[in-house]
Amino acid sequence: MDIYISKLAKSLTPYVPGEQLTYDGLIKLNTNENPYPPSPNAINAMKRKTNDDLRLYPSAECEELRYAISEYHELPGKEYVYAGNGSDELLAFCFAAFFDKDKPVLFPDITYSFYPVYCNLLGLKYLQIPLDENFNININDYNIENAGIIFPNPNAPTGILLNTDEIISLLNKNKDTVVIIDEAYIDFGGKSVSHLIVKYPNLVIIKTLSKSHSLAGLRCGYVTARPKLIDAIIKVKNSFNSYTMDTIAQTGMKEAIIDYRYKLMQCEKIIKTRQKVKKKLSNIGFEVLNSKANFLFLKHYKIPALDIFEFLKNNDILVRHFNTPDRIKNHLRISIGTDSQMNIMVEKLLAYIKSDKKMNR
Ligand SMILES: *Cc1c(COP(=O)(O)O)cnc(C)c1O
Image (tube, rainbow, N blue to C red):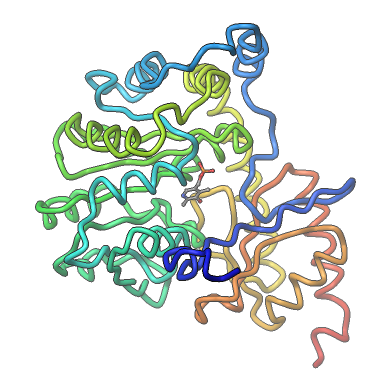
């Protein structure tokens, strides 16, 4: 049957998401989902919108929704915004809209692993720039001719935040190509650089509602950039699928954006929990990076990450372990759940670490 499969499809190495296990009693801390429910306003608006009007096509250009987002970010208008089905889709459109094949796209060696996947799909060259020994992005390492630059801020899976001055400096040094900042986790302790859009024509920001707005299941995200760049994204979108966002998703997303106070409250809770858990885990021998995201990235000074991963899995707690790259094989990424979920995890780890068998090998 191989003769029916295109060379392109044969050559692909797809992104592998965290395991989507679900069963009663499982504490799922492996894909950075939010433990709290989405805005009740968003849920109610979507229920009201579930009616006979679904026979009609949705708004192709998501006007109302994009207007609400531009208001939230205090941008001049909806032409500074594009909305789509989650950041992953937006990343694909942006890669196609902004990156050429002649030079490499630059991103960190340790980062969101979808970036190389899209480069391969679109036939783009890329260069992975190593993080320094403390897992920081050093912007001086990006003074290389490029087709564009992309990284998450805070970075994933490290959680480390790059400050705004450094982003400005990167934008100034890289005037001929686009810098995409993936702000998937910005609400958990960072500050969006969306106000820089009006000043920097090479800045593109991608944001998802999957993490801070508890809407991973609805699939929504957006891009902010100068109108010419947004037009290019829309051109790519309309060469692929005119109606990416359905009516229900546009409605729920708009209400979630408007109800930003609710989001802030949930994020505050997660930040508090994160800081408590970080302290507790540091006290039992974990080296925990300074995360500004809804997860912690850590390793134990003695016990291998895979042993801890398996112990937790056997105890119905699922966290994330990465097999590559080599530098992070001994780390784990643990999403921040509710206080009670995290307490259970910490207690289990404490008992495990105290067991003589482990510490005396
Ligand atoms: C979760 C995540 C995304 C994807 O978000 P979706 O909107 O759910 O597709 C994008 N970038 C980073 C860095 C992420 O962690």
